[in-house]
Image (tube, rainbow, N blue to C red):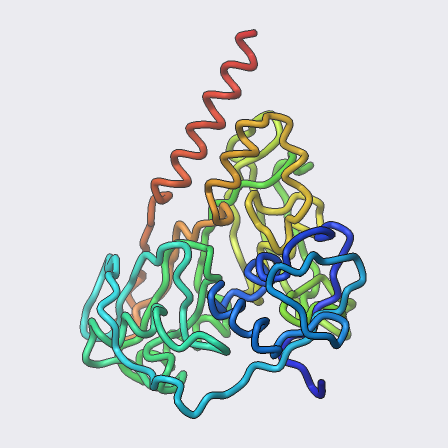
Length: 326
């Protein structure tokens, strides 16, 4: 297959996993049903051979795929997907994105995205990012919840994008990681670039093969096998927080891409089961501070942890208390 869209080499940690289940954790912009369809139709192969979606992976397997472009694919269109709008004026919108919602259409995903929802709820949006990304100034990963800014017109989009380029937008995240980072407060400064073997992943790379990336962290609560962190970004690289925390061996809890194999570090079986039920990674864009693109006024917004993350923390606290009372 020439110039594949998907090129992944299977690691030891994914041995025995079904092909369709593995790809669902690697390809944010493809639904599970679409992945099964592509495998069944032979568009995704293992070691250059067609296989079934249930194919069990082995270390070193080479997964390749070229995503077909269908002339009958439905055009981008507005969809009545509910949105949690925290702020709106004539220039911008601030929303609280739920986990599981892809930000914009991509390969294999033409509908059900935040962009489709924005096009339905708002008649006027910036077109600078293209017709399938109306108003989109920045993005969050599919399974990251939290705050996003949307531009209503091109002038606002230009002004907001300039703040990202100057790194004057202050972004705060809350994340739960495996283990206890030491020191409890610090920074991770390491270039990030495309993974050398997994084209859908990012990784810490040598300076000449990556882009500068800087993440500050602070431990705000600890549990027997995990720590809750406040994280601040000075750059906005793809998967930055997840890659940086993996690089110091404390990946985000529930991250099936960068934290595979780490769940076993949770000694409590009830907590391990709760991670499976969570069905997302524990990362939330909790705060954002920026200048209004027209008035220059400083705007600041906060979004509380969604219920599923609060419930998971409550479980950790209960389990920690029962452990200490023994």
